[in-house]
Length: 50
Image (cartoon, rainbow, N blue to C red; front, side, top):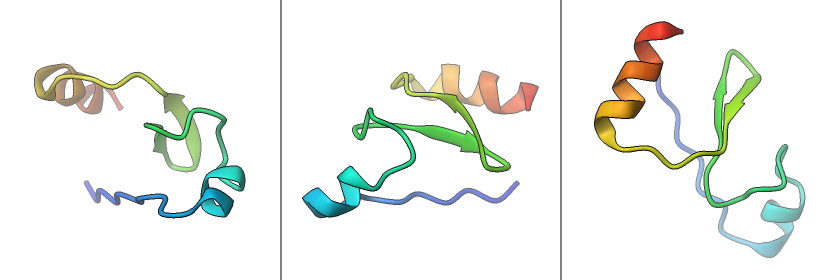
């Protein structure tokens, strides 16, 4: 599984983000999954279901 993190560094990047919650967003195959910040275990569990 390939993981890619994207850090928004400017106000313009945040304004042009694909979601309104710019602190955290999880996408899989281009589809929005969640904006919830998760513990490592919860994230692993979610990734195993995808």
